[in-house]
Length: 486
Image (cartoon, rainbow, N blue to C red; front, side):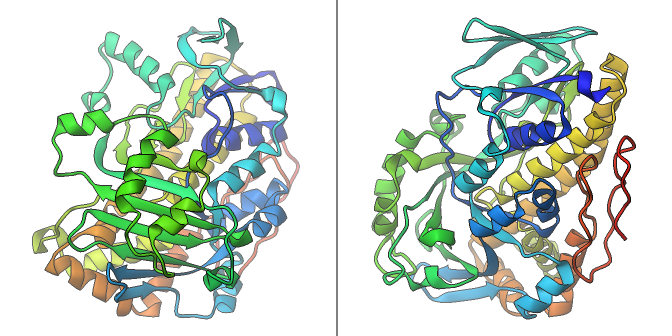
């Protein structure tokens, strides 16, 4: 029975916390191990798509999420001199969109989302300052050996510890030693952009009137002769999310390796902040004004990397979130006609990418991690025993269910990144068409496709269907006497 399973989760990011919150609701024993001394959520803002709203409603967090988030309004791309390039938004009224899909796309500060998930997890379940040093697994159990000289034994180990997952590294070392690790999985992550992100303290809405608006309008400035693109995202409670990307593709591999790090470390962000302080802020003043309104400890520098790993599990160990699919915008410094592969095709992909709301500052990773956690825990809840056979069956089903979505996310984010950041005549043409001439019927096709499948947490009461769009869902857990909503 699922109640006899003990799950060990490494990593207290969004994927690890979502997994813990689900296991808590499922009544499955679990513990979370985090190497940091304290949980200090870093990052900027992220988007949560309408299908994800169902999970938060089932978890009892929906009303709280609404209070700390804003509905998406539009995405406005401008040149460095503030000249408009174009705007993306649904041409229907916000009321019509909400009626069709039942929910808004919600924009939330990453720290606020982390705090919501933490509210469902008893503090004693999380072991801070506990780094995994080695793992041992056999047919009956998996054992963690940690930096605090403690060992922990469980039925399943979930590696939710990010792109540089120590769990994945240990697992891959074992597979490589046995000669069964695919060559592609041993290759490093792609890295062409550095990024600094943050969320300000509450700002003065008189100075920044955009904060008074009900909807969140993204403002993106594309540098012309400089390797930077910068975003401003108005958030709830008068806060501002922001992100600045720097093109380092011209650097040598050795230079890139010097800056490569698995940490979202505040200290690494200071130099980059100083380099961009003078750049204009779309609301007046400079980026320095926004940076100075952000607590220094909550400013972090990260790398925009991507890789879809093919090996997600081995024995009693399974990977979740960025540990198995790290997705970012793959950005080219130029865009040719051959790379475009036809203007109409690329524009359609652009529309689909935007409808996925898989945004470069972390929205796509968070959406994928949350969906993956729900799929994995749904399967674990229905497991009959903690035998290796049953666990392997769960892992196979999880991989089969999620790999296609991960592959789509990588491909679509690569195309969308080129739209947002590429330079040159073709890139300018594509942006102009995509942001100014896309018909509403094409936008609706993309939105309908993304919203048509809405899985639910199978062991919690299903919520009633919202919206007029005809959607599909999964079945309730076979152990729960529940009915599927029509």
